[in-house]
Every structure is written in C-alpha cells, then in structure tokens.
Image (cartoon, rainbow, N blue to C red; front, side):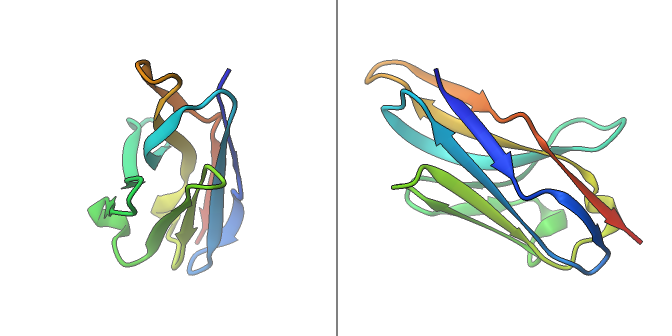
Length: 120
C-alpha cells in the first residue's frame, strides 16, 4: 500500500511564507513526476507545480516567481516553498505522485490534503 503524507500547511498573513512537504511510503518501485495541486472552495482542482525525477519543474502562471518546488529522490519527498503568499492562494493543497508500484504497474496516488489559509 502506498501513502502520500503532506505536512506544512497552516494560517499565514499575506506576504508570509510556508513550506509544504510530502513523503511517499509503501511498496514503491520508482517515482516519476511529483506535484502539488490545490482546490479552493467552489473551484476545480488545479495544478500548482510539478517536478520530474530529473528535477525539471513547471509552475502555474499564478505562482511563478513566488513558489519553488523541489524533491529529494532518496527520501521520496517533494517540497514546495511558498513565498509572498496572497489571499487567493488559500486552498487545500494536495500532493500527487505518478509512480510504479512494480516494474510493469504504473499509477497515480494522492495525499489527503493540507489546508493553506492566507489572511489579508
């Protein structure tokens, strides 16, 4: 059984910073892309940032220059440093991993989500 466990959410004032972490555990053969999505009330879940196993990152336009995604492959962990947070960043943030659980079985897993609230 594979699990993704997020941490690091919370309440912060506008202009502040938070760092999210997500650790993958369980029976994992290999991990491809990892990423962060978010879902605000009444809105669809959207991609915030993703990173390949080689370290190539891509970002939503709304967070470019403010958020930085990184990963530690040995620790099966992905991070997202969020700076200059804005009230519109308020959402539940979900970790996602595209991974192989065997050499021939590939699937995606989601974390349980962590709340980020930015006050104005």
